Length: 111
Length: 298
Image (cartoon, rainbow over all chains, first blue to last red):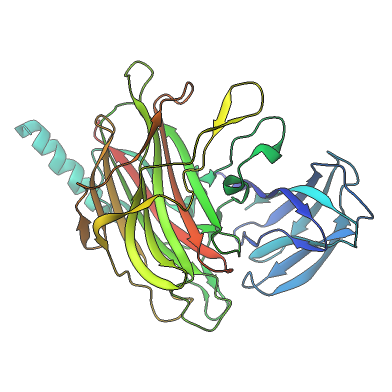
């Protein structure tokens, strides 16, 4: 059987301001992932980098170390490749006052 | 049943009972799908709402939905729980907001309007963010079909049988099965005149299934789960439920009915099945499935 390969949309049309993150996504079966972030509307303000976070339980989170740009224009896409991330995965960002981005976040996961 | 049919039935039963995966189900003669989530997502995906031109048109009930997961039921205190057998189960997780819901759906069509049987092993728990039993944190676990007659079979309806286990509401541990006959008003989407929407999982209009009180095994801390067996028989010809069983209880379905709305112009022979979870607190609700067997008499 072919190994599992999943496209999971983990945030759709969500407006991020201040402290924002995707919902915990459990994917311990996956050996690799690419996180895609697309801006669905024109972002506002100064955008910070997004960061990848991992967790043993989906409750307590650690910065995995990867950071990547958030898309700076409507329909722009950014991504981050990941390996060896354990079980729970999420993307988080801390947006300064006045900054806002409406995101579509997709995880492409492969066993 | 004639002698030949009886022999075939005996042979089929012997073969199935020798297979541990099938032996825990009682399927009708034809297995439409047997989804053991050790083989992946098996065609279960998220229930996205309808839209046109912009995702802003999606009703909030659908906008909150997210993708189901392949889960080992990991817990902070003792690690992975695992499934009924194998490592994985399908996990449906709500957001951490009172009343939040999430749904996993599988979309099929049917080839004969006759009896079908849905069987599943399920369990549910809140996210274990507190060292407390948390038995009233999950509002409900449930399932539904979304069905429509064939294009030449009419007149007929789009029929949506719903059942939920109302575990708790506003902190009260209720524990009873409920059904639904009404959805929200149908609302047009966009300007092309091709798409409508309604939210059939709205919190209103649930009715008690007569005799539907049931105390399920919940276990003694917020991380331990026990798996429950569920069976729901439905006749696609009569568009009526015929039997409902959870663990050792079989419920009378005389007082049960479905949401019935006019047939839609592009949903002929639709056979969708879905499971859902709903939280009663600002804590994520998790529903798990391992596994799901859909069978038919054809």
